[in-house]
Length: 222
Image (cartoon, rainbow, N blue to C red; front, side, top):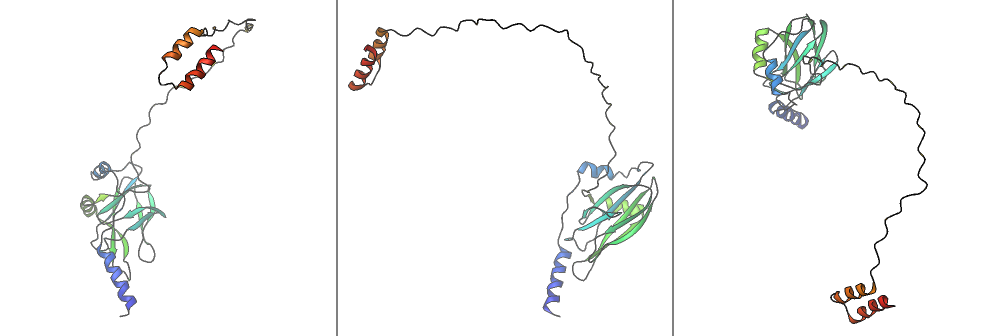
């Protein structure tokens, strides 16, 4: 066996035996979906779960009708509401997607298993429809992964506030009041200190040199 094949085999073995992680949905939503309530009367419910021991280091994307809903890790699942009719479910595999068809009926719940299988290099994946009993048992062992197209029951909309009609009211014309010709006299400036007060303050000023004292004295007395 060549060195390249040995290297590829080693990489593949590492990927098949490690652990991958994906974004997870809120725990409250996970618990809600594990009650397996019937879907709305005009929709079908779909659980896609993964529980393969092999390939735990691999993340494999899942798509519905050509739109990727997210990536799986081991012991995770997705939940989607489908319109009745034919749908194409696909999983990323080693070289290309593997797909199956599902004819969804309104009011029904379907369980699909994503299985990881050995591949030439990194491992592939396939999808298969399983029974309700098997699907419920395996979903209960798994945790809800965050889907890029998460579905939930819409909350009832709050009643809208009544519309408010704005009515323009015409105001009578008022003659503008002429500005007063004279303005109130500004407050008079504070009276200037007299010479005696200034000399008194100069005498009380601390730490003055003789030259600075003489300079200020001449400014006051001149």
